Amino acid sequence: DGGITQSPKYLFRKEGQNVTLSCEQNLNHDAMYWYRQDPGQGLRLIYYSQIVNDFQKGDIAEGYSVSREKKESFPLTVTSAQKNPTAFYLCASRSLAGSSYNEQFFGPGTRLTVL
Amino acid sequence: AQSVTQLDSHVSVSEGTPVLLRCNYSSSYSPSLFWYVQHPNKGLQLLLKYTSAATLVKGINGFEAEFKKSETSFHLTKPSAHMSDAAEYFCVVTLPMDSNYQLIWGAGTKLIIKP
Image (cartoon, rainbow over all chains, first blue to last red; front, side, top):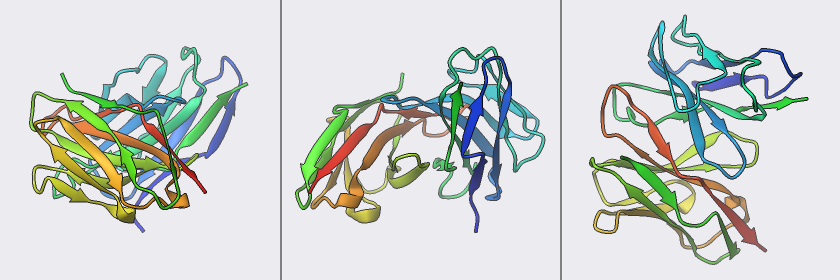
């Protein structure tokens, strides 16, 4: 089955640590996205990538980093510079062609908690 | 600038009664509009989308939405609520087609179903 997987489902981090959230897709989509979701708010874009080895900052990129070495993978690192990282993180992907080109497909999310 | 306003943060209805979740948008382009649903601690699932074809769009699970350009609205409705509809719903607008594609998210409406 095609889809997007995120791991881990739950992640706990001590203050001052960097952590990396995994996102993998087998939909052959060109574009991938990372969002942060906080209670009572809509999704906010952290980073996105439309092609391998290229990515763009979203609205709240500070304290985060990404890489896009493979089309299928778009890991997100939450660095110690992110002051309030406790949130639900969602990864999405999109095809840049075809009838569903403007539709994003989402993974199940990773809940990050800072202890 | 594009924006999306979901007029109610919470909507509570009794099982078997109609559901109305309101969404207004602002866009200087002809928009594509989506409704996504999110069950607790889950990723997002596309309910339906409007992409300049029919103004009345039917989605999954009995939901539908009507695009009204004169009112800049895209309200989500369902004739009869079911307990399984309890979730958070997001209205989303996109730029029609560009190299810096983004989704603009509403803040979400939490739908509560009373037995």
